[in-house]
Image 1 (spheres, rainbow, N blue to C red):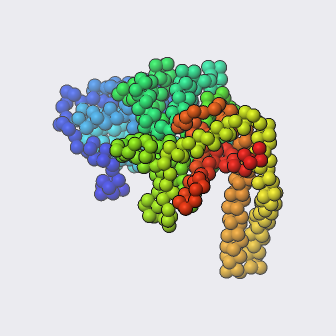
Image 2: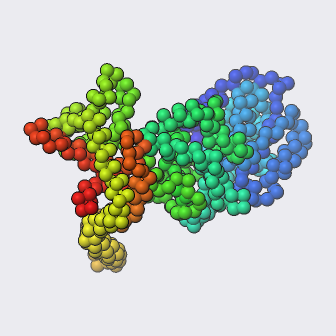
Image 3: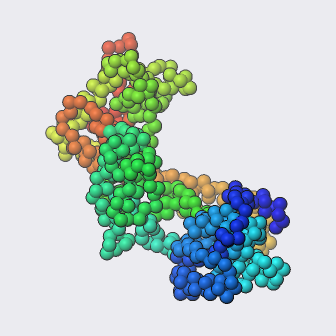
Length: 563
């Protein structure tokens, strides 16, 4: 690799290091005795221990009369990670012109990335006039042209391959552990702590669990993540990192300047964690390479979820309601007043959300909802579907109180009708879909056999390459379409089968309330998923039609009539 190529691959950090801040002072020159031990090296025994490395380095420095030796130790850091604290300190000293010699026990102590190690030994250290020595391999950058220096690039590649192999083995072990239901998270999420008698089991941290519940309640009241963070700050509640440190626990979080300065993203992370349902959730993130330390979020379909693995902090009904609310992005008003039905009011004709219209000069009695499609003229919606908030609130309050009364007076009849409706809506369709699903799964297996036979016929010369490509392409296309159908249909069937459970969920939340005098955001968000507003008929005295869809069970007008 020539100098021009090296220059182009160096990062800004390397370029900065190539410009020493001060000229070297012989009296300040130090000899760096660098020790590094990763968790994986530690398993290999005493030979790589920090104590062993120190003894070898100290003896080498004394025998070779290297001046001002100083130890720098990175204990527990991977060789593929060059952002180690002690190593970064050495680089700062090197930039200041204070480092004369850099000594390691062996090349793998410097690092296990062939490219980066090469940049230091071949380019950076010589430019900064630093002599690099590795004891085990007899490497000395002052001895240019020796056989040891000639094979240095190969040693770096071998060390990198060892790191890659170790990474693969660890990944394989972690995969097995994750698939078996063992918790892969190093630290429990805020609200839990490790069971002292079983590190794979979490116990509820009562103090933090109260805050987790409070955050979910605030969300149900209609507050966004930024406002929740501000409320927690106003209430002087310590952040998760501060709470962990106060209780002598490890934390990977950043310590904020103010111990109660909550971040909106921290709140967001808490609201989306399925672990609060009592589940173990594995494989939420992955890494692209053993060199790339960034964690990348997996898609939910890649998660492995093991239910009821520990005590739940949040019940399923609350979690579902909160997830539904978080999908509904609400439009901020100029005066920062928020509509009671903002985010859940929709146009019955075009399906767009309704804007909540208010202002500093608008009285509460004049606040209204208008179809956003009509207002923006982005879709063909000919009417505003206008309704005042006070009128909509009156309609919704009446409807909710009617449902509360029905549940109180005729619970058994009400529940049976809900279950009967769920069965009637899905039973026939369920059977038809299950037949189609079974047929598709059989065809996928059949296509596998056909494609295999085509390949065999092509190998023995029965089928030309052109015909093989044509047939296999057609069959593979059909198979892919069937796989997509199977995936989508399976999801629909699972949702339909959950409808009976949804009846129980609805009954649980509706029974929390008695006759209501006034609606609050908490009540509305707990009970209602969606409200559809029809256009009023100005030539008719009939009331404007409003369709209310309740959480878990949808519209209930047909059930009301039967009861």
